[in-house]
Image (cartoon, rainbow, N blue to C red):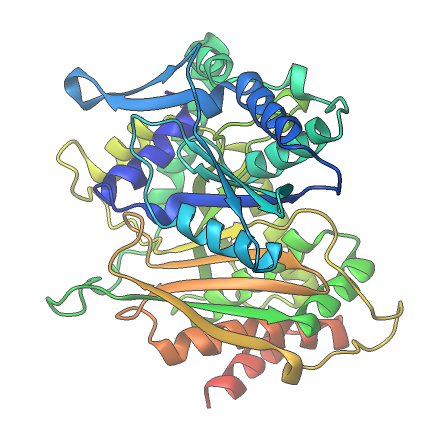
Length: 441
């Protein structure tokens, strides 16, 4: 298995088969006139051209996971007639049904259904297993399917790495050098962490409860766009800077210590690949006394160092962090994780140099779901993504670590800090502390 597959495997087996949250959907609306044979052919070619969609997984002797790629096989495609309901409504129902069941490790990591209206195909619904494909790959596969349905050539498909290609690279001398460099970075980061451990996840012996809240904010999107114009950096960098500020301000030593997700899509072949390359790596920023522009520069430097070491052998890191027995050898102290899943441009309706047109009063905040556990060691998890004309943030936390009220405050603080920085570009450390203090008062 590749390092990315091994990294995701750890989460899949941690949940002991109850990993339906690792199902990832996408849909494609079909143009009028598309025939069922055309849609089925597009799906067939998609599966034929991407080994990751024909990959199964199993444990071998010594509990070492391995992948197997099928050279032939069949995929069941459900055809669902929507009438008399609207096709869009039935598409959502079909997606929910496909998402409900966790993938088995020995089944192909793809499910497909075609929704028809009066016999005419209207939507293709696809659900994928995160062990086989990461978020970047989902976007690649959707784009490829769209091209196939239009009978167009999809750029990059022929040059994209297949999982076996990546595994071969990782086993090479160059791959071993990359792994050694990343392990040295991990050792340095772990050694520099604070000595005190976070409180027990069980909150005193009972089972942990993870609550998840979603925020959708136009005001945040417009503030990020304004800051991007001022500092000439992208939305992911700005969101990471705000994350660093919030974690640093709540820390006794004013230091952000977090895991950051790395896409590891360096080079055209990896960018075109439909597989699992994502891994997380430690990231730290000392925020003491820094203004927002200074914090932005420090965050960029720390992030580049983390991204440089985002590819590693998870087994070597697990031995470093958890030891051979699986118990923590060090107090890792990194319960926070951020996944900057921001593709494309964050929408902005504010005029250059103007004041954002939306206000926090327009922001949507809602609870989504509860979990009894999360990835090993992860206590607080933030995902950011574009939701035009807004920006979306999904925050999940162990409620013995962040209470439901603190989860709400944390998301509002991200929006408030961005708005304050957009309004006052030279926002000081004292100003940032004041924003957070006002929200928690």
